[in-house]
Image (cartoon, rainbow, N blue to C red):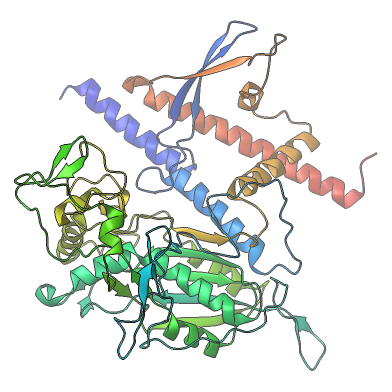
Amino acid sequence: MGAPVRLREVLNDTMRELAIKERVCVRPMMRRVLDRDTGSDTVVALPCGATRASACPSCAHKARVLRMQQCAEGWHRTDEPEIPDCEPDGQDHHDDDHTVGEDQTQSQDGPGPVGPGSSSSTGLAAGGRRQRSTRRRQDAGSLPRVPVENRTIGTVYQTPEGREFRPSMFLTLTLPSYGPVRDGAPIDPANYDYRRQARDTVHFAKLVDRFIQQLRRICGFKLQYFATVEPQARLAPHLHMAIRGTIPHQIIRQALAAVYHQVWWPHHDQPVYADELPVWTDAGYADPTTGELLSTWEDATDALNRPAHVLRFGKQHDSRGIIAPSPEADRAVRYLTKYLTKAVSDPLGGDGDDDHPRRLVHIARMEAELRFLPCSPGCWNWLRYGVQPDNAARGMEPGRCPKKAHDRDHLGLGGRRVLVSRKWSGKTLARHRADRASVVREALHTAGYLDPEIESMAADVTSTDGRPRYIWTDTDAPADTYARVISDLIAQRRQWRHQYDAAKQTVENRSATGPAP
C-alpha cells in the first residue's frame, strides 16, 4: 500500500474520531443543490440519520436523545394530551382501541383444543373462511373487565401533610428460560431450546400487544405507555415500559398470568422440501416432481385445528412506582433508551468484554435457527414447508427471505424497537423533532442570528414562476475529500453551537431584566 494512501486512511480515521467527539455525522450524504434563480451549484452534506451506533454514533445518539425527550414529555404529565383530528397516525403510535398487527380472523385467544380440558367449536363463515372460537385457553388465568374511566393521566395522591403527588410506573417483562445461561451463552448448547426462543422472538411483538390489550381491560383507565424492546445478554428480547399513572402490582401479576399468544400459522416443524425446491409456474409454486400446486396460505391456515405455537412471558418481572421530577425518573428515562442504538447481536457492554467466543457461537446458532423460520405470512421460507407464501411471486427461495428478522443485527426482532401509545404525548416523533428544531430556531432569531444557510435551500421555496427554486440531486464525494468534508462539518457545528450558546445567554439575560421593548 502506497504511503499517500496510508496517510489518507490515517487522516480519515482521525477525522472520524473527532467527528464522533463533536457529535457530527461520520458518513454524511452528499447532495448537490442547483439554484434556478442564480444558476449557482452547491454541494451540501446532510446527516445520514442512522439509528445504530455501529453505523454512525453521532446520528444514533441524536435519535436516542429524541426518544428520551418523547418518553419524558409524556410520562408524568398532569393534563390530558390533545390529539389534532387532522394529524395522521405516526408509525410509532398504537391505537387506543386496538393493538398493532391484530388479526381478528385468527384470534389469539383462539380455540380451546390445545388447552388442558378445553373444548371449542369451529366452522366456516358465510364467505368460506373458517371462524375460530374465541374461548380462552383453560391453562391461562381469568381476567375481569372493569369500568374504564375517561382519563389517561394518573391518580393524584395526598400525604397527611397535604403534599400532592401523581406517581407513574416502570415495568420490565421478560420471556421464559430456554436453558441455563452464563456470560450471555447457554451452559449446555446441545439441550438449549433454540427453536422455542427463535419462535418466541419472532412473535414477541404480538405477545406485547396482547399484554397491553389485557392490561387495559382491567386497569380502570385508558392506559398510555412508552415501551422499548431490547435484547438481553442471552439474545432473548425483553420489554421496558413506562406507564403513565399507577396500576396495583397484583393486577399486573394477574394480567401476566392470563396473557398468551397463539400463532395460527401452518405448522412448520418438519421441512417438506429441503434438497429439491418447489418450482414457479404461471399459477404459483408447484411440487418439482408431480407439478401439483402447493397449498395457498389461506387454505393451509383454514385447515388448522391447533395453533403452530403458543408463547407467554416468563415469571420474572419487575414493576415499581416512579415520582417526577426526581433523579430516579431521569435515570429511568435513560435506562429505557439505553440499548436503542445497538443491534441485537452487539455487545451490551461498552468495552466489548461480553463478545467472547461462546457468545459468538450462540449468536451464530440463533442466526442459523432463524434462517429457515417463517417470519410472516409472506415469508419465502414457507416454500420449505410446502405452503405458498402470501402474495407469492417468482424468485422466492427458502433461506433467502429479505425480511430483517432473519439477519444478524435483528435475530428475530423484525418489528419496531419503540412502541408508543397515541395519547402518550399527543405528538408524532416528527412533531417532537420539529419542536426541538423550533426551540433552537427561536433562540437564534431572538438573539439576532440568522438560521443556518441550509434552511434557505428548502425544497418548498419557489421561484417567481411558482416552481421549486432549489433542485436537490444525489452526488458522490471522492474518497480523498472525506477528511475535508468532515472538517467543514465540524467547523460548522462548532459555529452553530457557539451561536446557540450565545443566543441562550441573550434570551436568559432578557428574561432576567424583563420583556424586551
